Image (cartoon, rainbow, N blue to C red; front, side, top):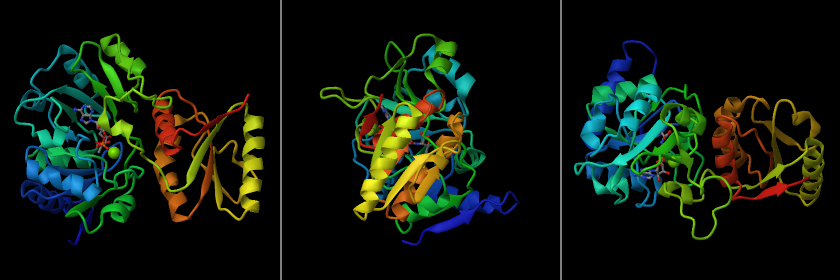
Length: 351
Ligand code: TXA
Ligand code: MG
């Protein structure tokens, strides 16, 4: 299949792009599009056959459900069997935006997109291209991140092209993805609202709006035996580059010393290594490949760069990556959650 790639130009021409993409979606095809978090790979959510194509294109396990993207809050009543008061409060406060809510589903939502669960994940994105595509196509869009399953999520059209070119009908390019990590997922289908995946919207922000909110214990530390994350997607090895990634935590001088000694050893053995640090700390390492993920005290800057950096390591055939650990405040918790997964939970703690 030849994949059509079209770039948003913010002129009258864009209309044609939305018309073409909308027709592909209504005909049961696949269109990748930017959102404010990462690129999504969309299909008509209520067309079971169309969304089945998403799983094939990504190589995604069929028990991993998809998020349904909407352009109007009223769609909640069309897709969810119950809309609790708390969902309305959160929708009012954080939609459109990087928030996904899990609610009991209506029968019309096909089991194939919910992995057979009785719930459905719903999100109203704020990115103007995503919003316009949903609105103008006239369908709800089921969309996971537009990467090959297991790879870092795409934050640039180039990443989508690398992973999915030839496997999907169309890619809408507009490299204005802003946050860089996927939406926060909150489960409102049970008594106490539970965060299943950290993102830009944090626990503190939820508690401010709806009171007590808990975080699924499977999220941060290593997954203990018997602890199954409630979002099926969170159990897979994910976001990982080919390189062996190690996170090194502790007092800064010790971290630098440890990483430099590891690099010296690995490079002497002829391996290609890289260090992931920050603008403020990158000067302290002896490695040939040192990447700054952003500013030390600006978690959002790291979120924006993280996935592109992980993908670059693969491009450069890096074998060992040593990463500093980053601030966990605000979106920093999501950054560390993704980085810990990329590292396969390999964290060296120095004191
Ligand atoms: O920011 C985002 O959320 C992006 C953009 C494209 O919107 N989408 C995204 O989708 O990250 P995906 O498929 O990569 O991640 C969806 C996550 C998975 O971990 C999945 O298991 C979980 O949401 N999920 C979906 N439906 C669920 C449900 N009914 N119950 C629990 N978890 C669910
Ligand atoms: Mg994903």
